[in-house]
Amino acid sequence: MADSLDCLTFQCPIQHVLDMLGSKWSIVILRELWSGDRRTHELLSALPGISSKTLTIRLRNLEEHGIVERRVYAEVPPRVEYTLTDKGRELQPVLNALHQVGEQWLEQESCVCPVQQLPT
Image 1 (cartoon, rainbow, N blue to C red):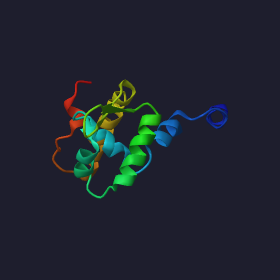
Image 2 (cartoon, rainbow, N blue to C red):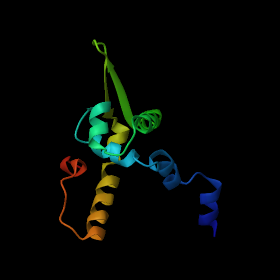
Image 3 (tube, rainbow, N blue to C red):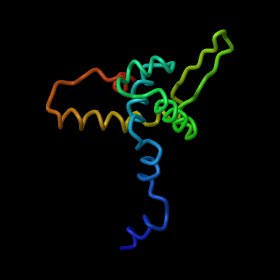
Image 4 (cartoon, rainbow, N blue to C red):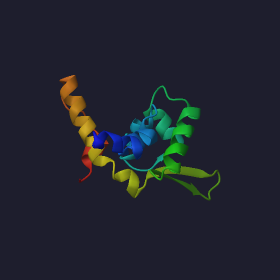
């Protein structure tokens, strides 16, 4: 019983990560960033159904948590790109595991996922 009380007394690590990533679109935004730096319009094209407002909110949240970095280039017009931070790259094994379980549950051939193309 002491173990369950500890989870209630201290912040649960699982809940901590879910609070950062649990919003709709956050995980697939990260999936897209595994292929490399992306501009807002590239993410909008890669994620049909997401609004620019929602994308902006999710990117800001990921940036606040140190998972994504926003880079602004002094060009005309200004160029803004998003990239994974080292902290964001630490999520690769978690996303690989989600990919593997999803494949099993879907009972289909493997898709090409950018998360799996990086060395672990």
